[in-house]
Length: 212
Image 1: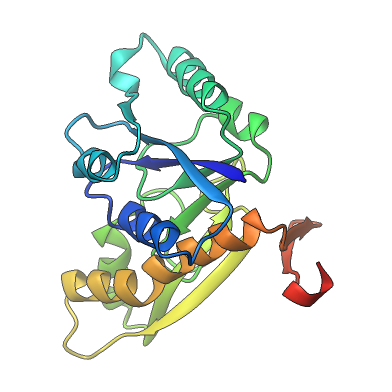
Image 2 (image 1 turned 90 degrees about the horizontal axis):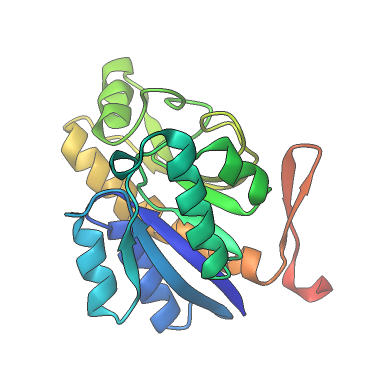
């Protein structure tokens, strides 16, 4: 059984996708041991409570500096015996202390096909606004491991989504979530839980089921 903590900042739609996948057996051998938000008003915490999951707010604003925040977050992850940290719309930069403590054990969902429209400043609607501004025809989502950079860790899964001529940032965001994000994140968690993701020389390899 793999213990996961899901880190969120807002509505928690990706959290809900994970919860649904666990409850429906699409993710197996996984237990959600904690839902952590930096925002006390995040609806994601209500989603967690509705499913009997432990939710907690650990916000940088409540600490004297980032180091104290990082220590508190790390202590919580250790107390809950977290094996994998899942960033599901988490808008706080993961402290280096956490990255070092969980090498290739933190994953993030990003709403574009990395390396397009990623890095510092690219989050939420801003990603989709830029995709439409540039006139690209295909976008999507990426699940990747988190390293010391911003959206630079090894890519685990990607899924493309077509951009329509009449798209707005909002309509594109919703379609990317429905057709890519909500599918990729549960799939990646299940693959990792069953030992099917290997990282070699900064790249991932997905092992087939029949060799395990």
